[in-house]
Image 1 (tube, rainbow, N blue to C red):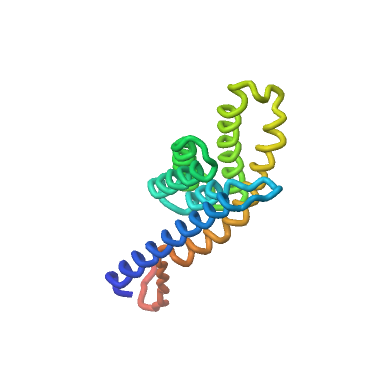
Image 2 (image 1 turned 90 degrees about the vertical axis):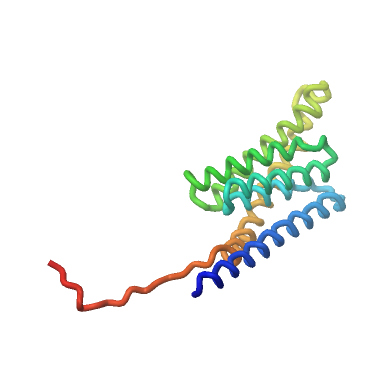
Length: 188
């Protein structure tokens, strides 16, 4: 394949992939702001940001985490920037972990999603209830925040194959070369 055509196709696929990522985040924002259900809604944007950070570079995943965190702040009605900062650092750390240490496997994604959800709901609980003395025995945390964490981990397990599919089909173009067997090679 011609190198110029390959670069052009890769740029086009990258733009399409990022547009699909942010359309997915936008749909999740609409779901989080409009759906009123009796079950605790997962933090969908947190799950998506962690799943995206598995496959993307650290800078791109930090930027995605910041945008997803700001959208999460707006959807939850919390102070603007808190989730943005936490998700930015969380996605940066998870991207670096997958870049250098961990394998891209669904169990690792579920563990990182659970850790991110635990930190996010922990800060939310501490700064909204515990500091002000509204819940001294942790009943709100057990009945409100633990189900949110569980549904967030389940949502990341459902979103991971979708994001992996988008990354594999709209990622870098992989070329394979087949070496032909030649009898002209002299081996000593």
